Length: 366
Image 1 (cartoon, rainbow, N blue to C red):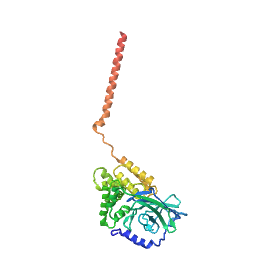
Image 2 (image 1 turned 90 degrees about the horizontal axis):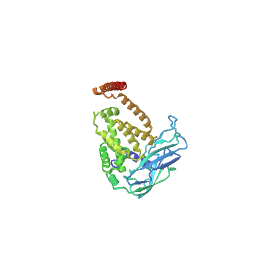
Image 3 (image 1 turned 120 degrees about the vertical axis):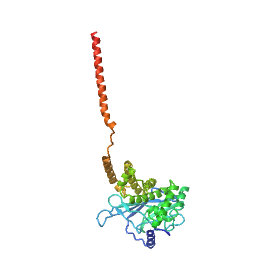
Image 4 (image 1 turned 60 degrees about the vertical axis):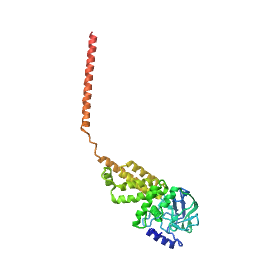
């Protein structure tokens, strides 16, 4: 842990004090954990869904309304892993975003968290094939159900990806987007890029690409605060921006992650901006629909419908303001020539009919 993020180190020190005296500030009546996959490979993260259920609605003391989110700190939830060589720490901290309200009554909240790396032992949590048992506790009296997870051997390409992620901070950067010191960020990015380039198709490569895409997007946004202005210059060919291409490249790989990955929602939201700046409104609309339907309770999923309405209005304004195509001289005179031609044909037809009628009259007279 020589280079661990200073904040993480402070957390770990505090945890050492608290682990033997857990007093949770958020105690549910029931805790449930679930996962969409009961088997993973060595080096793959386990994505868990954590659900807190309460007997009484969770009300904000400030607004007196049902809470939309519940923030868990390091004292509020721990998980226990059994399996492998020996039992792991009985109380390992959960690093997860807020639990989000399910329904409207304030009785149920849930969120996803990632189980991947053991920061104390500086090794993967599931580093060997076998069966592991997972549970979560909010207090010694409030423990979740247990889940059995089967860990299988990984592929050679996955093992290569693991070898490239040689530093514990690589995992911290990939999961949380944090790096220990500013001068180490380039090193973290370099390791993740190697994984993407050399281990294409692996889950770790897609995950690394997600983090790189988000990092480069932040750089791009700082450089180009107005996406509307950049879009205008970009589509008129007035600007070349390598960062834009890098963002698209990595986010396009990252979006291939499974839906349950917490980072994927953020990746989708940033891709919407990229497609907008590239003028691909239909693709942007499609991504917003996916964001809304797959992550309805997420930070960006809740905003997707409003964003789509704004994009539709922006597209209408752009179409209304677009200059009409100029009509050349020949095109302008084309209708005139058509009228003349039609007149000539009509006159010729009349003369022909008159001549034919005259010849019929002569033959009758004969």
